[in-house]
Image (cartoon, rainbow, N blue to C red):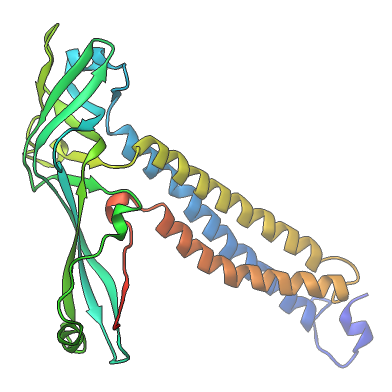
Amino acid sequence: MILADVLPGLPTIFGLGILEVMGIIALGILWVNMTLLAVVAFKRVAPCRQAVRNMGPSVGLGRGHTHLRSGGRVLLHGHIRHGEVAYHRVEQTGRSAGEGQIFFHDRNYSGELVGGKLEVITEAGPIQVELPAASEHTEVWPDAVAADVRAAEVDFEAAQAQARRASGYRRQLRTPIHGQVWVSAIVAPAEDGEVQLTVLAPKRASDQIVVSAVNPKLWAKRSTAICIGFGSATLAVTTGCTILALWPPVFGAVSTVGALAGMAALLSNMLFGNLVRDAVRKPSERLVGGVWTQK
């Protein structure tokens, strides 16, 4: 029985009532959009893994000395004993409508390697790696805590006056990198027994140096799990809503609940999709934002 049998005044299309046709179209819209969200999430897995794979084999924590003998790009894991080795910078613009708050959005991300000595422990013993100073072809990954560092502010009223202009109030956040770090760089081949190495200064994009305060491999695993989990959950929820929406009798209580659940899932998943996109950003491009409230 179709709805047209109950309400004979409604038009039919190919023997289906107009409401049944609209329901089929609604299910189609649900599946197209939810599938696209899932596909986009799955497609983010490969870049995350590739970014870490391009960093080279791991050297540190008592292993990897053989990679130093052959030279080339390696992922060094060690400690900076003195001072900061690099800085991560976020350029921001603040806007205000005059309510005692300035809302910031990120404009640009950059990194600078100030240089220093990295102590790496391999199976052959400790090795001192000299890191060069470089501002080009350098990528810096701060950790989640460091990303919350805020710049020293000027007087709020002066800043708000600038924030109300078309150009906005601009500031720079600078996060230092020190202590335990991971460094992806190109090193010259090491001789047997050599305990002093030098990282080659980057002269082109392929020589890029990545300095990270987070474990790149753990970041890749976490990002992969988020993307696969979100994509799989999206398809599972869509399937469940479809089963409920088609539960006989169509347009009955269960069917109506399924249709409403599908609509809610579609609207909420658009929000969750944006959250997943931001969650799997490379740490060097993690959104910072922020609000400065007058005290």
